[in-house]
Image 1 (cartoon, one colour):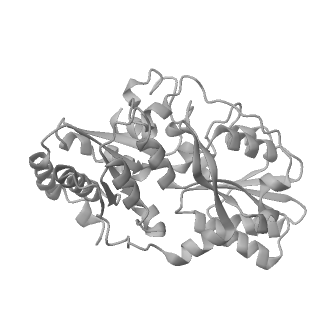
Image 2 (tube, rainbow, N blue to C red):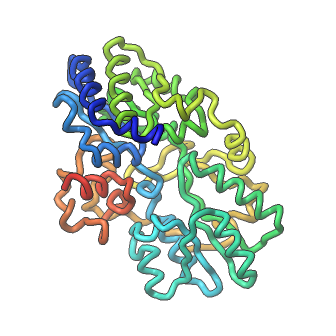
Image 3 (cartoon, one colour):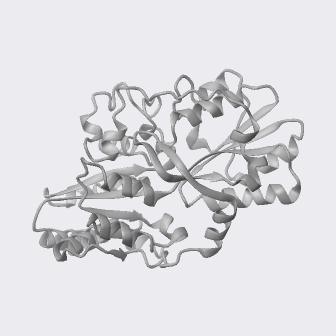
Length: 360
């Protein structure tokens, strides 16, 4: 299929890998941002094609991986209340909270429904007007437009028993935090193409210049990733700290302006906690006061105790490039996809789950 097969052509892998080897003149560490890219790197064993002088660092991953324990605990708490239904995507079900996951809460009698879109959760609210439906809305800028539109649609339909428990993240602020860390080892970044398809990539130029770190907007097929690595090396060799769009078949400089308008109407920036990374200023989206009747945090009083991750989980160190799944004593032993200690082992796009599946 066009745009798929041609980006998985193994002879092209070899020629591009050889070009990368010729271009690489010194050691460097390149971070891919998205878990979808990490998944492809592990699945297609791309690291084996690269010279030893290139180290791939696996960044913040996916929103499932960085959703904080507190949000999972809040979702569990609400699901156990009488006349409440918590709706969630399936990939959130096994994410561990401080005591229970949504799946284990469901086994204890919690009313939890797996849905495939936010509109399914809205339909659930209309089907059960006697119950409160809380949708666990997680995501980067890619899913934020969908969550914004479902809130607007709920308002249009006059649905009053529907709300969102949000855990929405914005990538640029996280990148600035990672690159500004005193232990930062990243020399170049592969930006997530699907995020840039929504937001554009204009805001990345400031990050590249300020931290002297070239950024290449990159897709998710193996050829996309190798192409991104090659461009990153070219920029590093030239000491050109700028942004290159390596995903032109999907991404434009301005992004999707209609989606941006929906996000800006319904949400505003806020400080946010990233599991494994801590709080990052202005790195999240919260529901604006004008739509607060759809904000579960506003509507329902909860026991909001801050809990900590399992001390044996080193996902934060992995996402910062300071460690690796193989260096975790629990990887593949006490921590497996069926019984994860940390969220990066839960989602298929989490770095630990990807390495466990393809490279264990």
